[in-house]
Figure 1 (cartoon, rainbow, N blue to C red):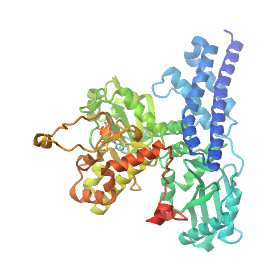
Figure 2 (figure 1 turned 180 degrees about the vertical axis):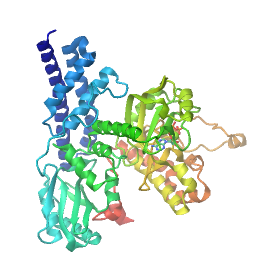
Figure 3 (figure 1 turned 90 degrees about the vertical axis):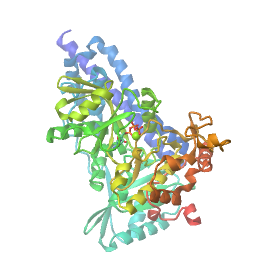
Length: 578
Ligand SMILES: Nc1ncnc2c1ncn2[C@@H]1O[C@H](COP(=O)(O)OP(=O)(O)OP(=O)(O)O)[C@@H](O)[C@H]1O
Ligand SMILES: [Mg+2]
């Protein structure tokens, strides 16, 4: 093939990838626009449907692009110099885009599929943040600023008017008044100069959020307004004015928002100013750009290895029966590989474990299920693994991990945020903190039940504590839909022999669950058991679980709002009844 034929081939190839990316972005935009309509029309099943749909957009676009590329390139699809040229041409094609960083991650998804790249190959991938800096957006592309002219109430009213919804506000003026009072409680009203908000609305579940900050004489204060649609018109349900509270709304244990963004980089950078402690990778995940979030996470792991002497070590806490888990001490990430064989009494298969992680990924995570990123074909220096970890991986994870000379090649792993395992936490926590954690523990079970999830392995070691003191579940191999479980009462013993038998003498089906058994199963020490019973006794009874099942059978969508009731502008119905 001569040079000009080569050129044409490369241009066509790059155009195919750029076109696939556009298809993906358009699909993403459509589904995001639908999120607004669902919110306006209180179509909560539509929300659930689209959340699942959105997860497939990326893989579908990459898959379709790969087919076309295969037809064009034939055997040359595995030719590295061709990919090097493709990357250059593609980079030029996407350079003017506002979302060029996502476009680069998208390209890498192609190369990784083709080369099963072990580690990053600088010749064919975009490694750092790309060849060209992202184009400079027009001012105000990502945010809107509302300078204050009169009263706080007027300022808030102006904001609400600027974000209009097809169905309208129920009582914009009343809400503005309540928000102004909430702001006055927290801030010195005279010092408020302006409010700056992200231009797009953040849609998720049955709520939508306006996010930004209040500018005051003494610095900025984060601001989130949570909107709901309880009766056909929009109301402001809660106001948050604290970094921790805002950060919990954007948590890695919640499903990703639907956000219309032309300049994702700008939106994320703005969010970072409000939540400076949140890694950029997690913010990209939060706004639904999780493939780019994954790229950034990977880069931050590489950077951490380059800039420290940290070695991978076995994670603190009890060893898993299904997973071998390790961590880098200075980075709050855990790495989980599936073991070759699972210890007794685990009966799941490898495929089932993966299916469970996938189920969680697509399900409402309710602020209680940790986000996991899946990686394939990673390579690290063996010298960066502790001897103990090498020994362990060499024995229990030979399918997933291969030692090749000076390298460790990991075929498949999940990463998650590192939390403090609850069993470890309880060992040293003061009594009030331990009590709080146990109350939270019951609340996790309730929140998961409300979103049709039964965690399966409910032992304390499978829950982690965040820096906000929230409890989050991370062990998915026995997790299932609540509606798939069979909740049963323990049968009464008929004979003395049955009574004293240590094994069940009655038939136990695979999906049978006996809530009465939780009491002893959890193995809580006496004082904590007492606390648990005081708050969550009903979780030990079949009735509670069947009631939750009924609710899901009826198709009700329960949303777990990510803020305390004290942040709400009006008490909820149940709270008023209590
Ligand atoms: N996100 C996390 N943060 C901190 N530690 C974690 C995290 N995930 C797992 N661990 C640690 O690794 C251990 C094993 O992980 P996990 O519970 O996911 O695996 P498993 O093999 O399914 O466990 P089990 O034996 O309970 O079924 C946990 O007990 C905990 O100590
Ligand atoms: Mg576990």
